[in-house]
Length: 252
Image (cartoon, rainbow, N blue to C red; front, side, top):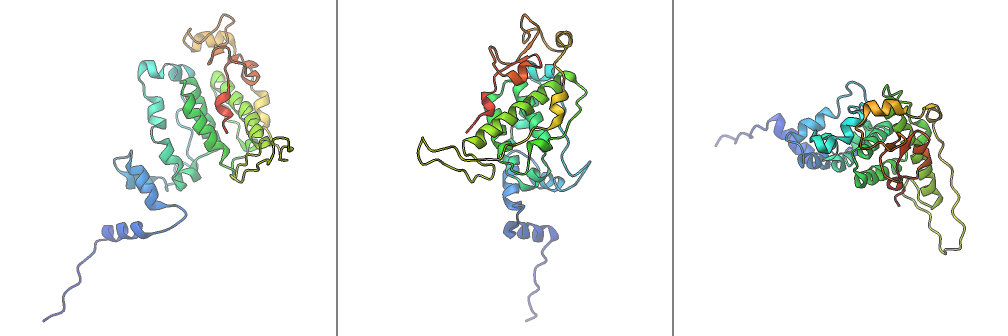
């Protein structure tokens, strides 16, 4: 009998077999599984993540105006849904994490805060804290052309600076090697303070006349301040004419 011919295996089948059994720090198979939960073409989505266009780091999405975010739910524009429905899966994909930036995370906090999604803000804050390569002092000045958005972004960075140092003072560590006290009376563990970037000090308060023209009347108080949370006590926001609380940054 003539020898049986070996069946031809297509390049696509070879690639799928390699992908199934490949092991790498990029966790390609796990990444595909996660993308398949939300994406119609998970492989194409993953391949696009490796294309450094327009640069290696992802650009800031939008950015969206304060009015658009405040009215997102009412107008059913779907900004928050489109940006955050699969964010948990994306955070677990190594190549996406490599291309994400601290400033993008700050803008995500801005979007969530304006749209009143506080639970998601806590998750985003945790993600930022455990990105130990993201130092607060290295957050770039976005030079945002929208003065209202710029003031909110600067206030978030100011407050995040205090929140990160507060967590460090409790013994939490950004590399997850936390330091615990054996007794309540024991001294708090020493730590190195995170530094604030210089640019936030130069960001001016929001002009109240501009607020009247730029946002719906409902979130403005009698003095013309932008009220994101009633009876808010944050001084970092208050000095820029924004009333809010910031407990969502102080997660443990």
